[in-house]
Amino acid sequence: MIVLLLAQAAAAAAPAAAPPAAAPVPARIERLLERTPVIDGHNDLPWEIRQNYEAKVETLDLRQDSSRWSYPLQTDIARLRRGHVGGQFWSVYIPASVTGPRAVEMTLEEIDIVQRMAAAYPDTFALATTAAEVRRVQKAGRIASLIGVEGGHQIDKRLSVLRQYKALGVGYMTLTHGKSLEWADSSTDAPRAGGLNAFGRQVVAEMNRIGMIVDVSHVADSTMAAVLDVSKAPVMASHSSARAIADAPRNIPDALLKRIGDAGGVVMVNFYPSFVSAAWRAWDGERTAFAKSRGLAGDLYGPNAPVPLVKWDAGHPEPAVTVSDVADHIEHVARVAGRGAVGLGGDFDGISGTGPVGLKGVDGYPRIFAELARRGWSDADLSGLAQGNILRVMERVEAVAAASAGTPPVDATAPD
Image 1: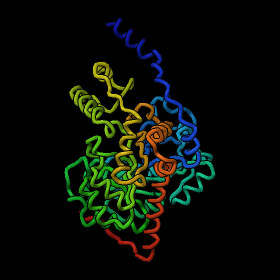
Image 2: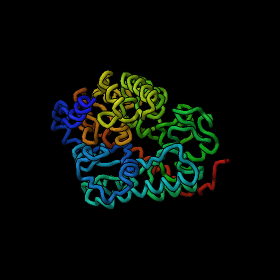
Image 3: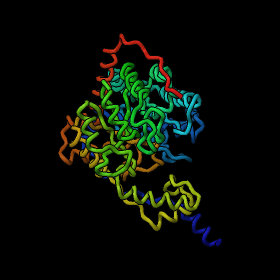
Image 4: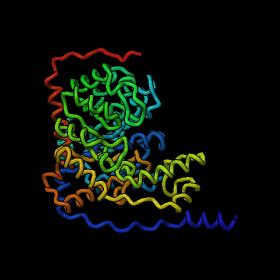
């Protein structure tokens, strides 16, 4: 037993094998991303800072390599710069199990973290709420910080709360997270609303009126279809991939991809291996079942996982998920919805440190563009993927709101 423990300790102390060197990114891609840097649709760093670092934004140094911290992160300033990130929608996620007034309080605390991040690094981040502001921030060499609320449970069934989030700089709201609401159904829960109920349609209408993007990631197909029926503005899927390639409820079927594209919206492809690769999803399902049978959390990976899971991983090698797999999703969305309807929503720091090979942190974006260039994508199409497509959606949402300027707010709450 002592020998075994010593062997385990030595293995833990030994440096990890260096990953194979990635192919150099072509100079063409570096130049393109310097001109039109990436705007990513979804990053959960604020929640990670809250959960693992007690929301102490000012005592963290995001200039350091955060992958080496006690709770490793996928995001830091150096990697954002290497990844040519020029805009980030920071998710102000809270668990779907938190409802009522506490959900509003926690959302405000998350918004506060984003605002404090921008204040702590004024040479790097600047808050932005419009497409024009994003362009101004990028021109000044900084990263535009935008905000997305990740679930309709966070408004506590009150349009007044939705409006106050907008006043605080929130750019989009995902209508549901992992649980269905009285007024909107989730892709990963039993239906309650039949897609969207009357209050759900009011939520969409009010988001159109105030210029907040409707985000259809996480929602049920019926909800997505209902949103497309009633929304006057284009929608976004902030972090979703193609169901035709990886059959996960969180991914979007072709019929709805086409409708999003036809309505001028954008689908921002997610990098979570479970949504990218059917093989990885099956492997993770087996791994999760094993973890549950041992009373363990199944969402810890690599050396930070419990010893039984580390041993399980050794006997069940993780299927490789690559940049090419992500590019397959991007190309599929582009074929079905149009190249003007695709973007990137990596979901970093919301995917338990996982990611495709070469895409486990925010420095990996150039590899996607290099792969698509190899497949024949033009500079114009790559620039649209990087930021042009989401900026166009933002501008259209702003125009719909401007046209609604004379429409008074509705003081509606969902019936209990």
